[in-house]
Length: 323
Image: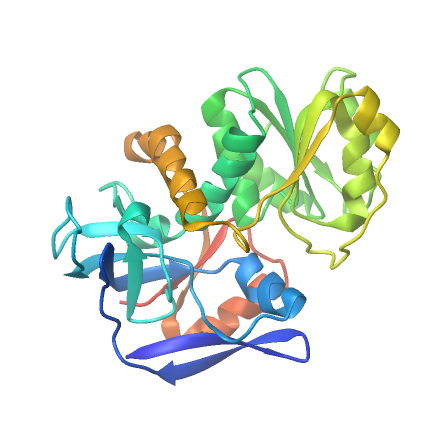
């Protein structure tokens, strides 16, 4: 079958098509015929390029039809429409752990369903599991037009919290307001703390999602109120170190945490999937959440899709139609 691999050369990730055997499911797994998959910055830019990881079969999420079922798998049958996190989604067939499998809501297209798993489960971890965002609280989202940023906006709306987002593009912020962003700040610089507090009634915010990186970390810390939480989820700026105000952490009882799957156990990933299914999936089923697809490419156009992500031109998820 046709597949696409992520190869790290000179600290940069490139894509390479390969013909490989069709995967077979092991116990607790199923194989899906992929209809659509999606791009994630953490995989395409952070993973191998930053950590020096080996070559990898790309694609961490997909939607498609169940093709084969492994030993011990129940509750699903061949032909069912599903979506979820997978291994090797950049291919005609991909492996999915049964604990990551979700029935595809009828209201979602294949492309919309493929845009959900990685970004929305990551957002669930940042906002529900560790960020503990509550109704009436305020969240700041750095780089709000990313896949995780858009998911965070929608989860804040689902909870009943306010959202403030930053972007270098006012046009992107205007698009995001249409899906629930309460306030937008057009900037790429660490100059937003006072504006954030002004928009929040003079108070610091309760949660910050930092998908930009070290260049804005200190300014993000300055936006936090008492018992504020700060999540680090990416480094678009390629800045991996930053100063931290320990006095602020101490006095304001701040929490700083990261969200990454690099060292997360299988049970940790399953826990996140269960939380997503409980707290977020009902909103996908009844229409309170509608995934935002930026642009759809064919499987042969994956390099062009990567170029769009590399340019940070997207608002929402870049999706690749496979089947």
